[in-house]
Amino acid sequence: MDSTDVKQASRQAGDHPALETVARIGYAVNGVLHIIIGVIALALAFGSKGTSADQSGALGSLADNPFGLVVLWIAVVAWLGLGIWQVTEAITGSSETSDRVKASAKAVVYIALAWTAFSFATGGGSSSKKQSTDFTASLMEKPAGQWLVALVGLVIIGVGVYHVVKGWKKKFLGDLESHPGEWIVKAGRVGYIAKGIALAIVGGLFVLAAVRHKPSEAKGLDGALHNLLGAPGGPVLLALVALGLIAFGVYCFGRARHADV
View 1 (cartoon, rainbow, N blue to C red):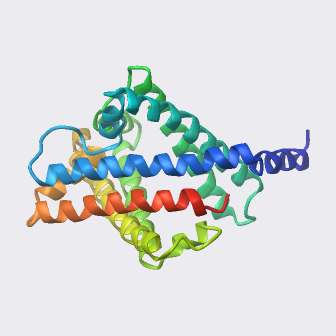
View 2 (view 1 turned 90 degrees about the vertical axis):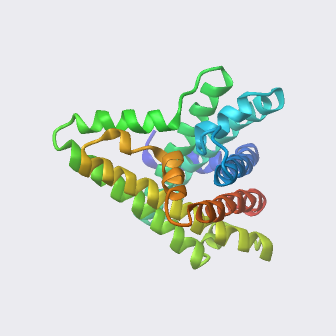
């Protein structure tokens, strides 16, 4: 099979109504995840010390009840489908190299999310904070490990800045095939900015871990939100970011309906 055949097969797969439907459900499940994380973060801002305000905390909350388990299994299939759709986009989508790279990166993220959801649905799963710390410790053991950890942090900061700019300039509208309505646009704008700020803090913690040579400093999203809580006016700042993450979740529901898939 030559490259033309591969592209044609990928295009047919990407345009299949079943895969498009699963991809849209994947965006909706992504919205559920961000809303749960936002609610946990909001509770943290008001003094709660319970569930981790990150991906593992949200998925763990779903795994604790029968309805949540159903949602988890839907998430496994939906995120896997969304990952596969992103693969087809990387192969047959835009001729721009940057767009192909972004599609490839998103494919990795969604397939990883599907695997994580599967782990929680089957009774496994581990803390995102522990995964982040273990990854950082492993990276630091490599030659020039501190520089690699710092580079990871700078990349995450860059992604965070990209999200802020994408939200502020409403570039996310380019991901949609039709206008979702003003409320969804506002939710997307606030959501992207809030998520970007959270990611930038996560990246900053990786850089800090590299500078201090302490893998435990790289604590992921939950650690970033706790750091924000410890800043002057922390509870208010954290509440604003939490509301922003909830807004991003709302936007994801709009994206599920209006996404260009």
